[in-house]
Length: 254
Image 1 (cartoon, helix red, strand yellow):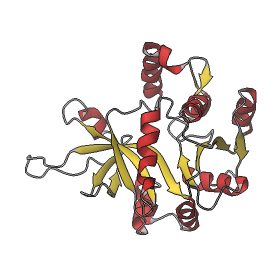
Image 2 (cartoon, rainbow, N blue to C red; image 1 turned 90 degrees about the horizontal axis):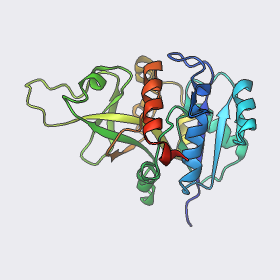
Image 3 (cartoon, one colour; image 1 turned 180 degrees about the vertical axis):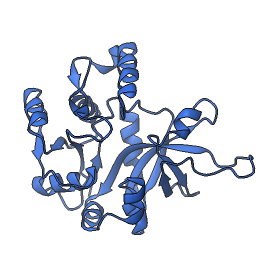
């Protein structure tokens, strides 16, 4: 039977590093709208929803005809919020559910295709995206804790995610590249349920990275490499860069 694919965009108002980030505008539309538009227009999902606990975001979503699900405020991670939304929607038990970050306004169809492709293999439990970073050109990003890095197995599965620059090159003879994490995920529905039923894990709480809960509980995550990072917005500085990128490529985002 053919898989059913859904995208859920978890959005909250009280972002730690950038409060009210979800409602800042690029090209006259709030950040979350761009993530919704990209997921809706790619043609790969049976449906796309916003999941939020904030009435200000809900009011804006209603104004822009973005379907939303009201969720509880106390979720420890975006994936926990996605799981509650999936339960409210009563999505099929065999569905593939993408957790699309509301601060990723420039995701493309090619990126979504890469994220979902591993599920052609019935053994795939979850997936995410990564991009190879250049040690010189991307040195600032590699050093930044806001850019999560991935250590990968030869199979393409994630071994570890860290805010630190991993893997460490002890002998200055790098064989493994730095791989930057692009923070969108896809899960089989039963894996999403399993993750949400697990308590936040020690590594997750230390690094503040929800995907570590999976790895600490022996749930596999496939990493699909893409060529270019999608200009996500973590900080106010990122927002200014995103606005410039939008203006330079405005014909693409209609």
